[in-house]
Amino acid sequence: MPSVTYITHDGVPYAVEAVSGTNCMQAAIDNGVPGIDADCGGQCSCATCHVIVDPAWSARVGPPGTAENGMLGLTPERTETSRLACQVTLDDGLDGLVLHLPEFQM
Image (cartoon, rainbow, N blue to C red):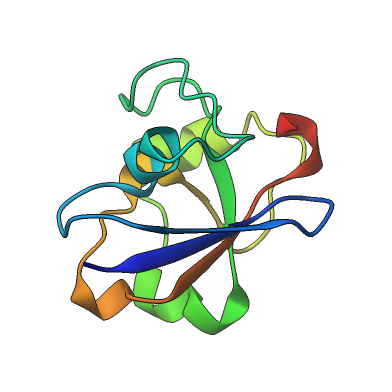
């Protein structure tokens, strides 16, 4: 089971484990991580699961796709490593992934 650590804007870490194939949004929702609203239920149409991938992980996670990139354009705290958690699928290669949560989602 891959593990993910979500770090809130004020520095509180939430470490969770999820079954491979689960996206990071669902892993956060299933484990009560604050700051992931997922208003659209993971359909890449709201950007309320915006996360900032830790720079050490950005190459492994990869860049956003076209639709995701458009939704990220609506977020006030977008960075070079921003992604939508619903579009990042966990597997053993992402075990230990670190994601930061933007302030506006808190």
